[in-house]
Image (cartoon, rainbow, N blue to C red; front, side, top):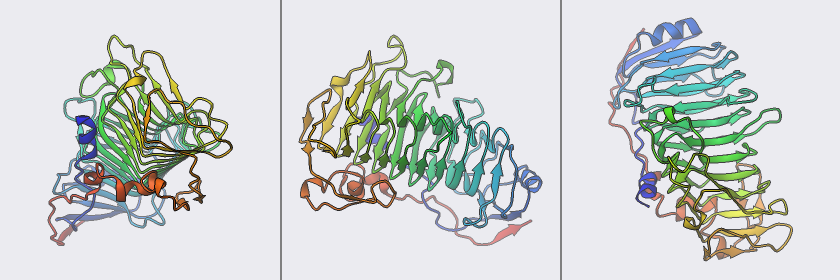
Length: 412
């Protein structure tokens, strides 16, 4: 439980900017100029990208801002963002720290859309990377091709991004820690294999996934864990794939299984709305050998609103070598839209609510609302997340970095 509470109180250093920082304000209009400026950029600088096509294969290596003076790479106009398209990957950040990537569009890459990693230096993760207002689309279309691939990142943020059409995972995390993914949209497309929406594996820990929208976002919309090659765990091999990951205030539509706990420990799914799962509501799986890893265990599933139909015959798919009896089910509201069935769960649910029609409006859109005024639904689902979840409240605080508000800037 201490890992769950720690996940709920992740400290994020880049939730908002207090104001401009001392540094150069640089405008570029093509990929060559961008590459030139990346070779000499300094802490506190802002590189502003004019609208246009910047191609692909942008390599950003050892570009380092500081906590007080991050380096910002941003599109000039979020309504007409610069486009990075085609090729194997659009942008690759290697061993960078305190960099903000904002207001851009990535499209049509054969491999990953954006890749960010620690450069293979597992003991020194990349810190303070922020991805904000980024559109990533049409990646793959099949196989292990991710929209946003993160390996060895700590204290990171993914915010207000839109991902549609990918091969492997929309966001794939390997050995990432103390991060937040919030207010993003994940929408599947026909013709793309879309294994998972968000995946946290390889020793990932203390990740908060909140207030996102998922629609047909892969066979597993969120994979809490996974199956990672042993040499890729960061910073070192653990006895779990994921620990202390929290999923709260999200809205799921479709997917074979919206939630999967996979070789994970102490992961929490609370105050989410799940609509129309195609086969299972959740899965509890072990995809690593139990002689090296602990069995999947101690998950919490509470205060969620689930609307299901006859497609769900098994509510929880339990795999071999797991400990489903250690999972806790509390205060969830279950509504069968085409019958009167109640869920069958691997352990007894406490204070469950059954067959109260939530009367959803715009159910399959990010603008979904709960029309029911029944007080038994007041504290469940994504709509109740911010106001009612006392445990999550500390994680919603915005902690501003200690940055200078000096508006004087060098220009070049």
